[in-house]
Image (cartoon, rainbow, N blue to C red; front, top):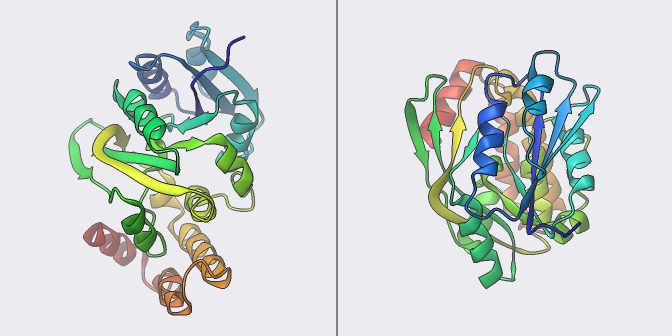
Length: 263
């Protein structure tokens, strides 16, 4: 079998309402030289049946007992054959030109190991609620990275060699596993974003950011302290490492309101 240009990694758990659309958005990419690796992470709804309808030879589906997103993504990464790996959540959508735009950028910027894009955020009914236009250049992204996550996980394309050198996703982190990986990859390669919104991110009830907010804050504290201790950031950046820990003392509703204001 020929090696595809990019492997798209997707994990799904009980994603029946959305996963069919997510898969279709990958297969409709203008850059068609791809493989899509879907890990069905212990679904108990009709996800298995929906995935079985994707008869495109570029789709590989693996079923496993429930293990969580982090382990599922490492499983998908281990199966990937392409030198570039992309991500898409099972409830999000990739616009048709997304991968073509990203692959062209990475071909022209060999120093970049992690490339994201902007995103449209929509509610459960498909109504647009926000547009994310992140910083684009390496310097601005590094300055922001210690403060908050400047990448939309569903939008990234990564050089597989850099991901593997960084150690992949840390399976000790059930949440914020993407933020931790970006921090480690930033020590090995350049960072960039295409600010245009090339993915659609669904803000559904039950997303990790809403349900497991305290766990996310603890993980962010750990990631930032580790970056400061490693010397990747100066000591005074410990202030940013302390922020999520301090936020844990606030009521959940206050934390969510502050996050909306700061975006």
